[in-house]
Image 1 (cartoon, helix red, strand yellow):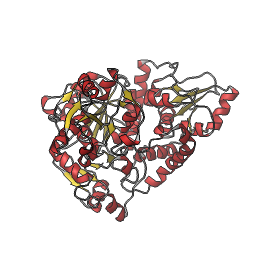
Image 2 (spheres, rainbow, N blue to C red):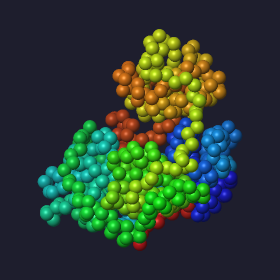
Image 3 (tube, rainbow, N blue to C red):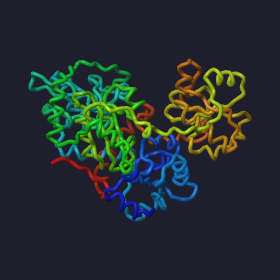
Image 4 (cartoon, one colour):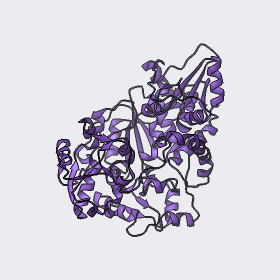
Amino acid sequence: MTASELHEILLGRGEIALLDVREACDFVGGHINLACHLPLSRLELDAPVLVPRLGALIVLCDATGGRGDFASRSSTVLSRLGYTHVAVLEGGIGAWVQSGFETSKGYGTYVRAFADEARKRYSVPMVTPHELRARLKEGRPTTVIDARPGPEYAFASIPEARNYPGVELATRSLTSSDPDHLWVVNCFSRTRGIIGTASVNLLKQVKNVAFLEDGVMAWFASGFETAHGAAAVDDIPEETERALATRAEQIISGYRLNVSTPEVLDQWRTDPDRSLYVFDVRLKKDQRLCSEAGVVHVPGGQLLMHFDANVATRRARLVLIDDEHLLRAAVSAFWLTQLADADVYILRGQPCPLPESSAPNKKSRNGGPSLSVAELATLLEENRVVVVDVGRSLDYVNAHVRGAYYLVASSLPGLDSKRFDKPIVFVSTDGQAAELAARDALHLDIASAGWLRGGTLAWNSSRQPVERGWAPERLLTPFLDDWGSVMRLAPEQRETVYPEFLRWERAVASHVRKDDTVRFHFFD
């Protein structure tokens, strides 16, 4: 498919899954705005969830579109998985740029641009770190709310902040008898702080609320103290079920949001012409729904923030599941309807188990022998194997099997296994990527002793010896899956990098706005 043909399809109304299959370090250097990042190293594991319909049009892009490059290798993988309508972007990103079409640098640019456009569209109130600091020092009534998930809040937060991630803040009773009281919503930088503030300002009609401009990063860059490892205080009461349901109905009717039923959902599951994504937006995962009803759990407002990581097919159907009051789903649908080229629905009721014909097709991976934790521990003690970790690099840095090497899975064909005088045991976080690597090693004539069942999660839970960090001599490839997350910075880097990141993020929206394929759908 040529760049012009792809551009024409993106301007149209048909379904398309545009997948950038390069590793993250290349993706952030410049990508098509509407592309979903699904690297070759994760393709076989994640494609069945990210692209649920085997007949959907899939266009693969990499740097060049050349034979043997990421896109052509990915096409082979998808054909093996049963996808029937797969094309490669001729000439890759280079041809797209030469045709005069837009790209963006960085990660999450589509959603970040949407948040900044929403900030202007809805006149989201804002307060600077210095203004917030002055209020707190003066003792003026102020409640700071961090809208990120718990682990991100614990990484670094404002000392006074509570933690109510995503749309959970909308379920709380935000009232105060003091007219000077101010609710201040923040995230690490901008996106979730903007959306959280706008949600309670627009949808709950809370007027004394403001977004903390540039979040924890700006707070740190201003020289103010940040907390690390904080435990959140939950002292804002939840509204009654009746109040939550009433508010949800006001949002649904006021913005004419789509509502569906389990019976209609069952019909959509067997529709061969439309892709379907079903998400549970509640905080707590319902294991039955996820295992029996084909539902993906993305709690609260995180579905908006990580939209491209969960929905690869444009113009698909999205169905949101919630508690009976439906408030989380209503707030999420309010934003997703404006962000996505998709038909977004709120489900009244709970879905039924998947019919047999719709159950995921889980083909055997034939990864060769799997090893238990005890078996690998014995082999290592006897110095009979080498361990190669093919999981996510951040997981490797946090904790890996002692002495393990690191390899990005997509680089396996180039591995010179002769450097080792022992067979390789592949490991990954949960064992899935390791099983695939062990299978591929058999076809590549790489001496393999198998893969670790249960992955490093099982290894850690068995209290086996681990190492943290990394050593250059243990890297068989660089951390190609590292997209430059500011949460991976060493403390001494933050003072320089945070301001640079914020300058980039503030400019994202004006850059994305130039792309005629990007269309947000803001309410009047």
